[in-house]
Length: 445
Image (cartoon, rainbow, N blue to C red):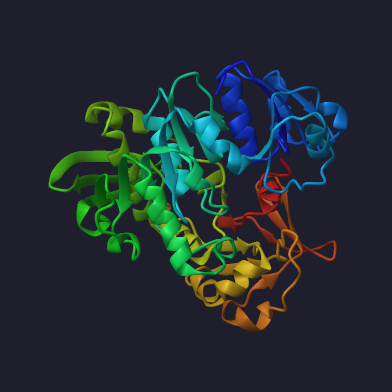
């Protein structure tokens, strides 16, 4: 697309839309945006020189070349309506991707679990690439590293099928576990076809070939690196240095020994995510450069995110699916072994009634091994409530039901009906959430 275009983003405070706005600004476009309320992302965008209107207003539309809006914006939005009146093309974020990324060398990462981590690790390795991630990289303190060059590391989203619009040069898939099935009419065949199409669009693909669906794929018509963690990973070990967790491993794949690596984070799943990133990067970079650059990866916000390393180790984690929670708890138990810090307390803020109902047995089982479980109200994301008897279903954990969490220095208070019903002030405390618990764990920040 022409670099001198004027582009307006409606819903610019969203993590996906803001990434595109920053990227196009670096590419030379004149960017503006709007949102319903001020937030940390809109404040950051303003410091970059982007004009942001709060709230939405028709005056924000003033002859731009293009308007792009987030998925939650409806056709009756005042700015969408004004853009139509002025004859300005209006695209959803999904619709805009093919135009924005169409002439780029895109390393696209997809999958139900691990894609943000894999994308962030790959962005640490590929220093000359822009990075558009669905989470904040702690390396560059943003969800975006916006450069003027042609190479892009992109977290590709299957939730709205937008990963089919990102023009992948190299497609990386961590797994294809069913998620966001409402987008695919709850049809597994349709879901799997979308993943296969995503892989076929690319010149090179790197897949976790132990995934049940990915392992069934035959010739995809491109160069396909098939990674088998069970046999390709060896010499896995873990250490904690000054509270910082590291995973070390040796990687072999398709008969080649790539050597030993060390990466931030704990757990076999970290070694898997890192290996997928390495196998993609090795297509364009020498091994010694990859081994050096991967050291700059220092985690992503809300993924095993250590907020306090004191008498009470407070960890924020985005896991909101049973598979993710199980993987994080496995890592936390390893962290306990290495640090001798006890007990292990999990605070769970359930996310979406539909997800809980679809994965109920998985949630019931995934907290095995925690010393204490705190359950908060469901973060409904606008969904209607579904009757779920949490007290009965999770009785084996003898959970504490709280309304909210308040952080006071390095102590967490459990609140119910505006009264303190408990205190967490020692051991390891992990908050599992894709909602607003993250702010409470950070003391309201």
